[in-house]
Length: 160
Image 1 (cartoon, rainbow, N blue to C red):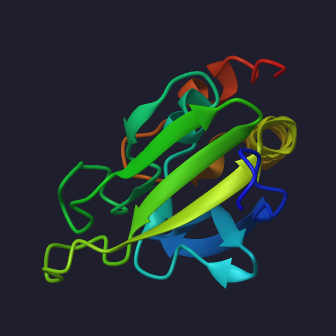
Image 2: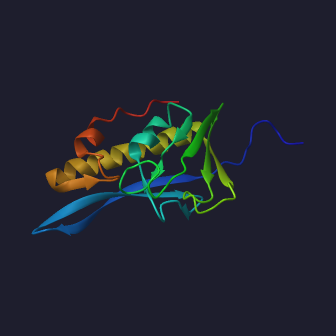
């Protein structure tokens, strides 16, 4: 008989690093995320929207956590992640294919310990903000349209 509390939880790892790329005669610094669940890279064909990730610590429902680099919902990635809060857990239902090419509708479900999830998201936000401050005005963060000023103004993640 299965217990109502799943003792097995998935492991979420998020970190940011800076990559330099040429922008005309200058060099631009891009603050780039890496997202792994149980060592599986979730950002193979997309990027992370940190605003949506932070929001997912507070609200449930469709979240565009994984999104096309252009930042437009439904472009490139046309299926959101379904986020639910279940007691001491946060659950993601991630479509097997984030693009409409797949017709199966299959999802991969991940379950995270809520306190660990919130701490992981808070650490990722702080790391991205610190990198933005260190990199100065020549830095950018994805997806397109997410400005450094907006990143620096994001509210801290609430404690669980």
